[in-house]
Image (cartoon, rainbow, N blue to C red; front, side):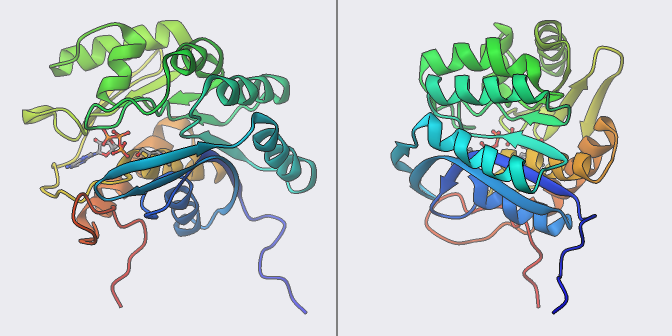
Length: 270
Ligand SMILES: Nc1ncnc2c1ncn2[C@@H]1O[C@H](COP(=O)(O)OP(=O)(O)OP(=O)(O)O)[C@@H](O)[C@H]1O
Ligand SMILES: Cc1ncc(CO)c(N)n1
C-alpha cells in the first residue's frame, strides 16, 4: 500500500475552538490548511454552538485536555507552524502560553480572538490580560482586528493613522510583527490592514468586497498565514499571500443560513 502524504508535506497545528456552522474556528483553519496543501492538525479548546446569526453556547475543555492534544501531535508527528485562535478562558490561555514558551515555537501566529467584528466580547477579562501579557509576546505575528487592537494598544481606532499607531504600540509591547486588520473599519479603510514588524510599516489593501458573508474571515486569514509559514515563506510574504487568499474567499462567500454566511475557503464551483 502506498501512503498519500510524504514525510515532507508541511504540517501546521491550530489551537482553536470548534464552530458548529463550519465557517470559522478550527473548521476554517483545517480547510484553509488543506487548500494550501498543508496537513492540518488540531488542539480543540472549546466547543461553540453557533450559526450565521450568533453564538448560543460555549463549553470549554479542561486546559490539560488542550495540552494533551498538543503533546500528542508534537511527540509523534511534529509541525512546521502553529496558530492560536479562540482560547476562551484564562486557564487555557496560560496553559498554551506555557507550552509555547517551553517549546520555543518560532513560527507562531497569535490571532488574539477576544472581540468579534460586531464588537461582542468572546473571552473574559482575565483571559484578555493573560493573552496580552503571556501569549502575545511569544507569537511571531499577531493579527488583532480593530477592536482587539484597541484593547491591546489602549488607543481609539478610527482612521488609517490610528491603525498605524496601534500597530506600532502593540509591536512595542510584543517586539514581534503585528497585522492590524481592517474588516471592521468603515469608509476607505474597510478591508485595509496595517503591518508593522519594527522595521517595515506596510498598508495592505485590496478592493473591499461588498458582501455580508464574512463569517470566519479572521480565522481564514491567520490560518493562511500559518500555512504559508509552514511552507517556508517569510512572514511578510506569508501575510501578503494570505490577504490575497482571504479576498478570494470573500468573493466565494456562501449564502447559507439567515445571517452572515461563511467565507468560501475552498472553491466549491464544479
Ligand atoms: N468586506 C471586505 N473586503 C475585503 N477584505 C475584507 C472585508 N472584510 C474583511 N476583510 C479582510 O479580512 C481579513 C480579516 O479581517 P477582520 O477585521 O474581518 O477580522 P476578524 O474580525 O478577526 O474576523 P472574524 O469575522 O472572523 O472575527 C482582513 O484581511 C480584512 O481586511
Ligand atoms: C470558534 C470560533 N473561533 C473564532 C471565531 C471568530 O471568528 C468564531 N466566531 N468562532
